[in-house]
Length: 316
Image 1 (cartoon, rainbow, N blue to C red):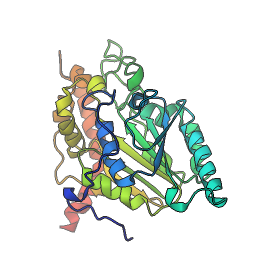
Image 2: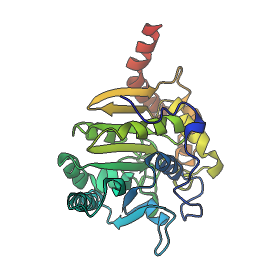
Image 3: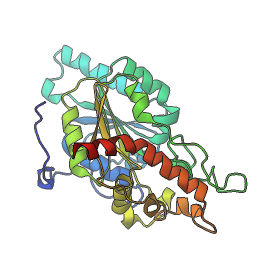
């Protein structure tokens, strides 16, 4: 498949900025960095349909940091809003009132609360209708804008305001993270991928590749959150790197259902290095180490990666 840019070197990423500085989001927000990088590939002809969440703070009336357009919706209805915009644009083009060159890419911008939970029904409907839109989920693994409550994207053993480490639940969150990638893949969209702000070339290549497909396109962006995860904002790049190198966040894509990993660590780093860097996991180590919880996290990583690492070893 021929793509316009190969993105083999960082200098191939555009220097033009489509999101201006000075937003109201938290310092060190990994999701904003991922969106900034994605916007460089998508270009200026976009309209964002924002589901209520952390990124609602990006455009506080009457100001917006975006050079493109912005529509704010309720938490559950962003895909429905995207349908209305896409239909309107198609009608204008059909009537000759809008040229193809002026057409806009419709992008749903939603957090994990809207993507994994509240907005999943309307998203499923949009995919079923084969709506031609992009879906950008900034996954900070909690309802970050309303107090860092647990969402179904919250990983096992993380502490949130609604899943504290307590006598009956010493590990904090008892349930594993929902697999949104596989839920979308079951709908048979043409393209979906996971991305990370710490891997900008991988991110750019995926957004560029997705331009060739018409229909629903999902990007789940790993989005470190200093406020909710309790770490220094300057550590966001390191947190994002460790998530990938420990195997907790797999970089992959699916083209018409066929899954391929775009990066496989040669050797997985100790997950404890990742966990100890964040206050939301501090209860796993103090006042006593919770060996059972730590072992469960390690086993889940091993179970996921064993087939792929075995394949790599056999290839040698």
